[in-house]
Image (cartoon, rainbow, N blue to C red; front, side):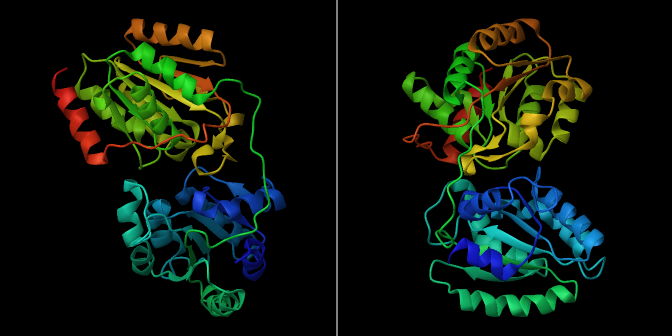
Length: 373
């Protein structure tokens, strides 16, 4: 169905969410219709953040908000749904729009398979009635369902539309760009050159895909890298766990701005522990690029100041390859926790591939290598 039709049927004037490729039509429609507007559309740090923000909107206005997200974000909403929205607590009505990655019978990446299997069941377990919208769903069907949903929302209950692949169409074209000149894949090549045979933990999305392809191009083993293909926002915590248990081995974390924002408390824990062998590189393009390019707030915040406030003894931002190479070498030589923010452009190769090894193979190869260090 046309995305504008869904927007009109729902008839809410406040949306907040975390972008998803399955919901790109909706995300582009919202960006074209509202842009980023605190009165109507906010891209938040994580899905729990969105849910609480939506609750605040309802408390202030009495109206029903919409929270959109990929189904991987269901885990992040369980706590606020169960202990804030639930009708046994505050009975706050919210409409969820959820992109169904890993739908059974539809090929998808390994990190989406199990989440896809339990997507609808998790909603049921949380007491959220849902309706699945597919490519053949009609506007009349959605209108009828929405009429029933309004009765539930009036009782302080929550509802959800689960969006199958290709279900939403006719989105406006929106161009996402920034003024940065450094390309992420080239940035990763410089990190790989600097890191040598040190282990790298990389964040979800295109960064891990580009790291994998950089190893292929260099004819290098993939054993050096743990690719965090899912679990967005947790790469730095994984890297911390490795670094604390391999204190004599330098560990690198290649992170992204959207991932850092999603679970920023991880930086406080890293800073408090101060592992001298950890180098945390945050590639910041101010965008959720892997799922379409919608903006994050990271382009407008001071990650260096945040890192220092969290206890990182060294933190710096660079916007050129000359500065990047200099700071990578400095971080290698100082034997002290370091963060390097790298200002990055938006964009990737159209023919960018995906890892050809399984997630389990990646883990096993990485662990075998770590044993030797």
